[in-house]
Length: 279
Image 1 (spheres, rainbow, N blue to C red):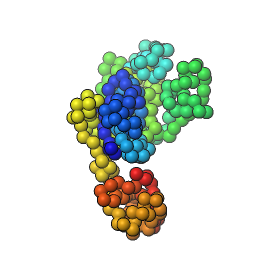
Image 2: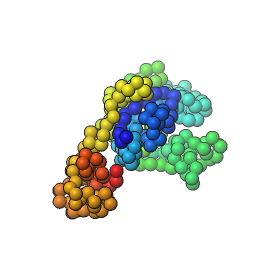
Image 3: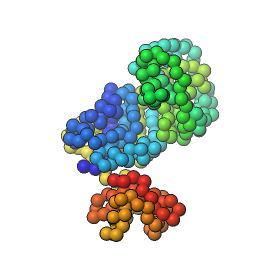
Image 4: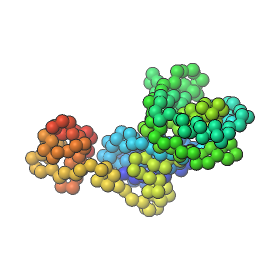
């Protein structure tokens, strides 16, 4: 089976837990997700089955949309409400200050990766350093904050909606917002509402999937690339990953098929087409 399914991840499970559930449901080990969500988080988790696992990096690169809550006046070791409180603050944030920070927040900047993350330094995951109480300089990533919309502010809980680039950590975004507000805060709730064109309204719960109430997508439904069925001459070359002339006038990428079977995704390179992902 080669397919994509959009899961609405429940709170309390890791992304790996969801994949493990899908392994049992679809009776295959060849399943991967396209962007880790914290156990606290819910929402869109795009999962790929079979040969489509080769598309993981492609879909991971898509922009993401979130709705998240900040609880002001509390800081935890993990940056979210599941952690141990390490600091408190009674300073009040005014609505005018909040609006000022939102309107002036940078669209692009180098964001520090949170210590409780799976990013590796010298072959070791950052959260392992944290658990062992080893000090380490945290890496940074250049991120884009395409939009930051204030949804509500009540009882020291701020709710935002944001669209961000690949590699953006919402826990780090929260700390950056709080730093600009001259206070502290922690992530109280997080929902991924969109990844690329995959919307939470089109996602399925694990119960939906267990009860056969879901739809699987094939590559032609979720990748907006031209589709070309190969003839008997080109199929041999493409199957072997050969570079071929761009006689089809492809501008970006193309899906090659043969007898309704997905063979490869090629990309344009000047006047040629070269392999991008072999399926």
